[in-house]
Image (cartoon, rainbow, N blue to C red; front, side, top):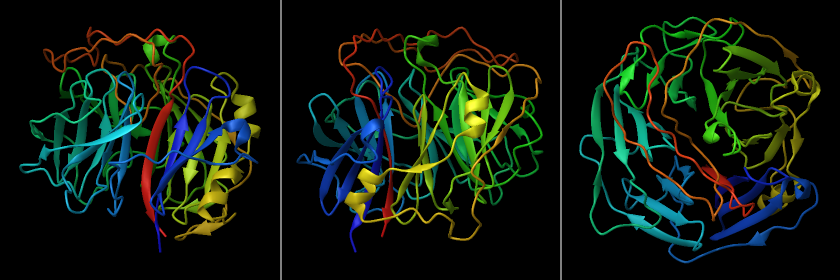
Length: 392
């Protein structure tokens, strides 16, 4: 059976706000166009040479928001530590040699900080970092993972669930942490915030998936301030706002799948189910009532490539989710700092960029004065690419 590598390609600079595509289906890559074409559009073959074999069992994909580069990890079993780089401007692939050292490239969860272009990964109890500099293609010298030290959370039997917003890494479902709370790592200052941040009591202390909603680069320098958390039981989708420390509760995915992966743009949340099918949820960042009434729908055009259909019920255990949702909030203080990182992102080809430093003096306030990147978009959109490997 073929390996299927699905990509949600989400635009941050133009409407409609989302693109979708596939990497690695029968050795080919596809673009399925903007979200208004998802119901009936025809996929376009965008296969380029030098692409990874996509034969890994846990492939992860991240976009360097300010460099138009996509970094693909775990896509080559012959080179498990190396990272494939897709230059979204040149539409070309190269492979970067990575020195793993004590880092285990087969067992980790990670985010990519869009300010510093550093990976941060939790693996076997330690937090690791990897500086991707401003790479849009592989360089001749290897890059090494660095161990930043033991995580200051209980990682015993913890299958990490990580999200990025307002310059923090948020950890969901951590053992011993109450529902509605998330421990925080401040990227630029390199420290763990004392005590978990409270958002509300309604999202569960359980395993699930998390993904950030992206923001147009003209707004707050493109720094995300909301994270979607979907528990494995699919009972609801919890959208956490880290500026106001509030939580919206909206519809859980119509396909309940503990092995699903999720991606988000500014106004779309996409589920890639373990059977290869895609569904999406329209999100309005300024209208909680609309979100409460919104429903999940299939990405029919992309599903036509994969041959998969949304189950409309449970996969890998669980039960069907309700079609609607409700909104709730809890004001509990502030959780901010000044670095930001993403598991996905978008950029204009004509924008200008700057890269801020990766460290500063520790602070007990959870805030920093590190410089954020600024992109001036001209309307030329490459968009946002995120992906995961699903073996059919």
